[in-house]
Image 1 (cartoon, helix red, strand yellow):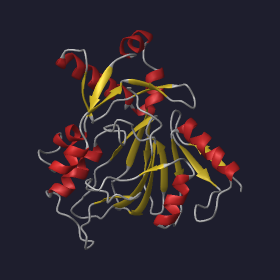
Image 2 (tube, rainbow, N blue to C red):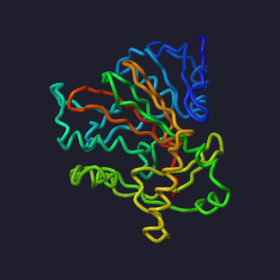
Image 3 (cartoon, one colour):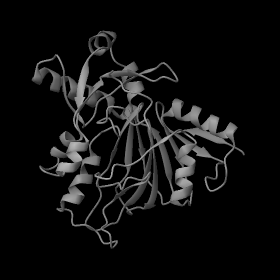
Amino acid sequence: MNLIIRKLEEHIGAEVQGVDITSPIDAETFEKLRGALCEYAVLVFHDQNITDEQHITFSEGFGPLEMTMPTDPIGDGGPIGIISNLDENGDIIPPADSRTLYTVANTLWHSDGSFKRVPLRGSLLYAKVIPPEGGETEFASLIAAYEALPQKKKGYIEDLIAEHSIAHSREQIAPNLMDDAFQKDTPPVNQRLVRTIPETGKKALLVGSYTTHIHDLPSEEGKALLKELLDWSTQPQFVYRHTWRVNDLVVYDNRCCLHRGRSWDRGKYKRVLHRTTLAGDGPTVE
């Protein structure tokens, strides 16, 4: 297999060529891909016309999968989550519908699953239907952002603990977007503000739209710090913007980067992506 890995931005992102996901991939190639994911945080594979089964099989090469939650609007308890603006008949859901508003929260910077006690390790997002304009996804390096912080700031935030809640991110879009069952399944959890990536020993910030407040800090001071760190982490020099093409597969390490979807005309254009997720490698707070 003629594997080529081409860096996309200074701090994040690489395009992978020479890999056909529809065919079996040998152990040596997968080892290189896992290493590249640790190095670049985001891997882009173009022109991969794959089935859900092939998507799942390829995902398992990066590690154990986490099943979707049956109470999650994008899941059914299986390994594939569907991120879409379509109803069960394939028609566009009206923009003001609560099902649409729920996914609008994906336009906020976040790390998949940081609202879980064991945050998700990674995600593999596959483009099935893409609008002709808009709908890009941006990724921001939490490692590069941390490393660029002043030493004094690193010391100040090193041991801070923050609360994460998926309800908090949805409430920033509209009230009552989560039903009682899903809220019961996803109570708030605590995460470190700075975590260490086991494979590399590098440190990364852990902030985003799920973060509600910082423990042991006055409320307003904690909120100001969270905003400061989020704004810092999402500066252009830390960001890769992916413009989707049909049959793109993008693999990203949730421990190392934030991401957000960009807006598009949801009432006019269809957009459908399928996502698998990699199970986390442990809690950040014991």
